[in-house]
Length: 341
Ligand code: PEP
Ligand code: MN
Image (cartoon, rainbow, N blue to C red; front, top):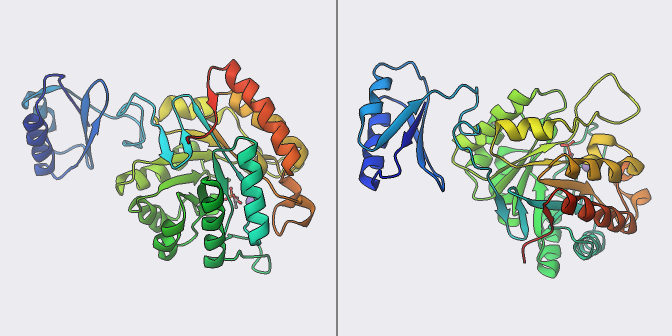
């Protein structure tokens, strides 16, 4: 249920209604919008007497939330959310571009990538320190050493750092170094991990699982929101289909579809979504034209030598060229591409 408060409702009215909601065994989440304050009463909605909340002080109306996700839904919060983390801003016309290598390999690699993507106009640096790999014999990442190298790259460039966390046990450690915690596609339904990142002060980038429906993806976001973290960025990174020519199938229709149902920003990953360097720039341009709130792109100083995902990584000049084209498209759809200083 959403309890929509009147414009004239006082702080005391809001407090009274929070207590009423809690007395019915529901959780009260207060969303203070520019237009109105609403209280989301989340939990078993068929509790007795819920309709009578409409006669509470300062209440305008009480509405059901039809979507299976509540806090993530536009029904609850009609205005789009902007997620900010250091130099990164995504949502409401700000297109954030997160770029860098698939994995952190060495100081020279990550620091040179950070400078190059910054010069090309990226808003944040990506790089995996904890890598979830299909094979246990593949490079698993430099772990804490990789986090330290990311922190060094941020020191030198000021760019916000986006890096993956693969286990609930590592959330505190990764939160010490990262500005945004990435939850990888393989972990989208790791509910303990979602809850743990929901308790972190850092923003979360939640990748769509390759076989997850959009409702399952948004319900995964709901876990993070319900655990207390409002700063969630959704990331469409492609799904598994019968097609084998591209690594995954990248459904760009997810962008306008998801934006209609949730207030959370959605970014596109054209690197994992295609699996081929030569397809990445076209999909990045198409994503922006479709209204994506951002991109996450793999960029490596020498992709042919990358420890992971070199076949889908751009080199520095390819990234620079992609950014110039994306800036033109962003202007055409009245959005801004870039970073916060
Ligand atoms: C990554 O970003 O390098 C990664 C492992 O992505 P995904 O979880 O989407 O496969
Ligand atoms: Mn990768």
